[in-house]
Length: 379
Image (tube, one colour):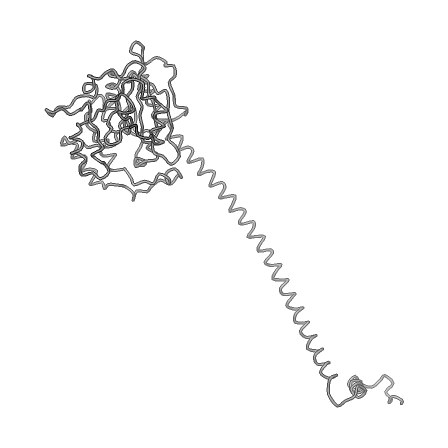
């Protein structure tokens, strides 16, 4: 029974109809992108099913019972290791290849793309899911370059180099994808490993142990730019013809490459090639955008501070006016209190018991004093 496709797998199927032609999935482990009940697919991995189950037996994140039967293996029973092309040659040519989070791990990306070009038919597809270094644990690491790809290829790298191992283990961080999307990158205290641990991994690699790590770092734009550059310098027979960029709060983008027909010169202009739209490397554009955002915020902050000072001056003036008004009101209240006390005393005198109003009036008149003639008033 065909398993229900989740949104992630549905997006991949939108890039490529895997039901058409025979295909190959690289490194399916326990979560194959394309099931055998959905398409004519073969699986290739480093080890066979038994070897993978033994390797991941102690890993709680890998349900080993879900690891499928592997059709082609890189490590042979005698201990030798085949190239990807040689391991899968018996089933070639393939109409398509799919690989999820694989390309960033391969020691020699130019050699890996070349192996796949050998076993894929003309105009065949290579569909990849690739972590976006800006939103995953690689965010502290600098971008990798075509020059580094050329060097690894010239060295015939079959294991991650010292550069890759040290950079990975010295700089990967515990990250929160929503914080990264919000422009809040992790600080140094979020690093996963110490320098001593990174050096231990380098020593393991130098001793001949295969130390798995992210060797190559991409963003959607840098992937387009570097795949185009590899093709134009004659190091790749692939073009990118379709892409699903990284979605909000996600860590990966999806891309489809097309195998250039063997009769064509891969360095010539290729119709349908999807190219990066930027006019400079994306990390430099991000740096410029960051500086522009900082300048904008600083300008807004200066304007806000000017407005605060203006309001403070206005508030001070109003405070002075308010103090004067309060002083004036206090004086008026004191006058009102004096008038009230005088009125209360006058009322008290008028209300004295045992005296008629005439006698009270006469007493009041006496207090006022004699008339202006100096003589007694006539009766």
